[in-house]
Image 1 (cartoon, rainbow, N blue to C red):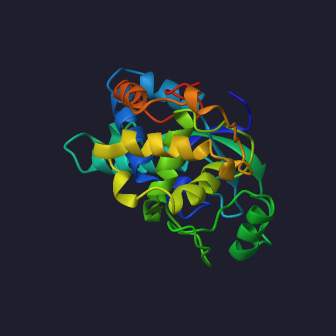
Image 2 (tube, rainbow, N blue to C red):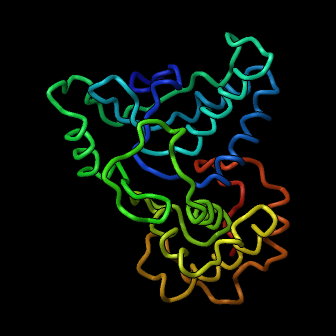
Length: 249
């Protein structure tokens, strides 16, 4: 294993953002539960998908991506501990982390200075579930609030709304774009395909041209609602590294 990849307890995880999309977290929990049913499958998956993090001066892992998977692991670990299963066998209490920056020796940094440095390097996103800037990021992943439009942005990308690009917090930028254009009640399991379809159409409009990953196409090439519904029916998990809904072109 790479020297910068560490397999350790999920208890050391700390967030660098304030919100996630709960729909995506739920989908990730479903996937991880299914992986845990096969001996060794979950551990193999987690070792192959390390969570990128900054090692902070307090020795904690500050996630710079994959907060949805991190929160899914936290929820599943608590769910396991609340069951009759032996705590020592909890398969969700450890995962691998890819250290993208090591600040563990910077003991002179206050936590306020540490977070300021993270933001300076585009490694934190201090905005709440409505896209409003906040003064402090929650201490634990379990305190992250739901931003339904972040779920929509992530799922719409998997349906071909825009490309995955190396731009910090791309999904949050798209979430803000969708925020006043897609009705909030649509973003639920029952109407998810319709919400994604609407988001895909909006993502190809000229108004979205300035957003990262934009790839405007002719209306005739856009996916139909029935096409998105069919792909969602086959959906398995929400792994950003391996989109399960290939781009629709």
